[in-house]
Image (cartoon, rainbow, N blue to C red; front, side, top):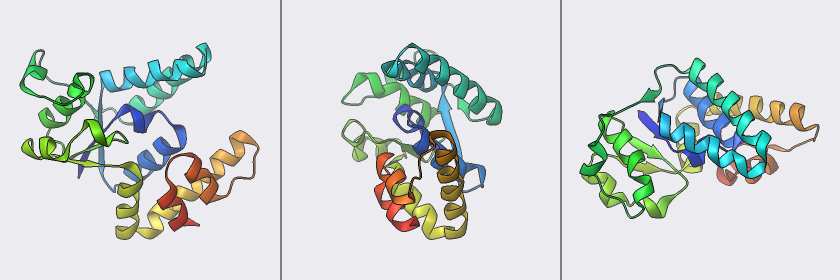
Amino acid sequence: MKVLIDACVLYPTVMREMVVGCAAQGLFTPCWSARILEEWARAARKIGPEGEVLARGEIAALSARWPRAQVSYPAGTERRYWLPDPDDIHVLTAAAESGCDAIMTANAKDFPGNLLAEEGLMRVDPDGFLLRLHDEAPDTVAAVGQAVLAEARRLSGEDWTMRGLMKKARLPRIGKRLM
């Protein structure tokens, strides 16, 4: 399955690490566009000027690790598509034009299923998607979760529980499943 990952999934670190960790294990093929990556960098400004700098470093590392994940489309192609929020049309365009099967986003209201279906796409939320991957490959997803938990503990110095970390990352259902 080829999935375009929206900026709202890439920006929270734990959510991104869970999703990309599963992709690294071959459970799906991740995609994003340069504009999505730029949205991530701009969103990171909210935590201060160093937030954007850190995000750009993470984006560079992600891009180096996944050189084929970045998709593009011809200029003007966005005019063919429509969504309730015009600022999200580039996400739909990137997914449709690159042959993705789904858009992974936490922003359900701006990606109506019926509009995505017209383009042969479906919307998946990160928590539900990770649950489905766990159903298919429980040991693999559990190992990704353990690696993310260990790294969160190392970086924060806090003794996170799986459930607590995933809940904070807006992944409560997979957190409950992995505990």
